[in-house]
Length: 448
Image (cartoon, rainbow, N blue to C red; front, side):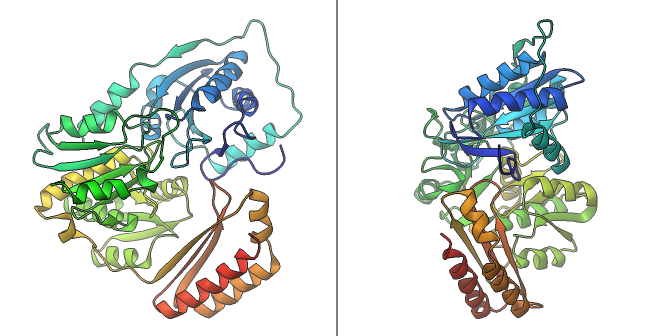
């Protein structure tokens, strides 16, 4: 098991290719049974709709039960539902089987504790050390776990979602297009919007194991935008396969940037006296224009490292109940433990109705500073490491940072979910931003 297993959001890869194999999932369950599931000796497992979920779930169940740990199978559930409801299941921890926005042939394992919080870096490092060791896990004929089906979490989550609105007619008059990505929110999200009085046009809500995120969802919003534009809908909402990411568009089909969503949520919560700590958290990836806008509202602004987990950690540190990522993860901690596309969509809809305006009359809330983002995909993580550690590449980056110092920023990072290097150059001078970005990208591309 050479190489780092855990990224910013668990383990991820191609199904049936290490580490997304049944063998690895089985050994992971053994390690978790020894390291984490030691008090209540109960774990919960959820999954999204991709075909390999059953295989990985079965391997995890076998591993846990062979170590005397009981398993509660939650079935197909969104990640935010699992993190919100797991504390009611009296377990040591939970595993969410999902590759979020990735294609069906990928899968992943997200690990959360018994309170719905994602594992810390320290915990995953400890786990990785155990997984890569030669330790043999002891089994006992007296200690064999049982498997239970969970039938309470989905109804409880839906009740909580409906309670976000002041009444069951709160969305009356709203017409919305919902792209469910053929994922875990396919049945839940349209039902909640209908229950609250909205007129709903539903897209991509028939998962078959292979069509999750396929030409739909948060990464492929073209169909949603087209339908919104050609109907009387006021907005469109697209989620990803496990429901922790949201993308929206206005009534004209124009896609709204994630930073603009953060700005809208901050404005609405501020006006409603619901913004705790008078603070908002975003990542180093968010546009400088967002920071300037929030400061005009008198809101404190904090940046975290890229990754939802780091946003949440910073939110706890500064006492904020709103954080997000430009990519579409929005954390409203009064309602959810992690990014929740359904709850975020509900809050946006309530704010839109309150404004009595069209989406196009609200957005954009601020003008973005010039920023170029390049996603350079490689064939393998090993190729990424070679390029990322290249002395020439790093020298180019250092020289570029010296050139833009005081006028902008440069971020070059490895993706935590796929073999990719992300390059982000931001500044107030568009010509300088373009020149520097092109130079860094050209040097990295020599290694592709």
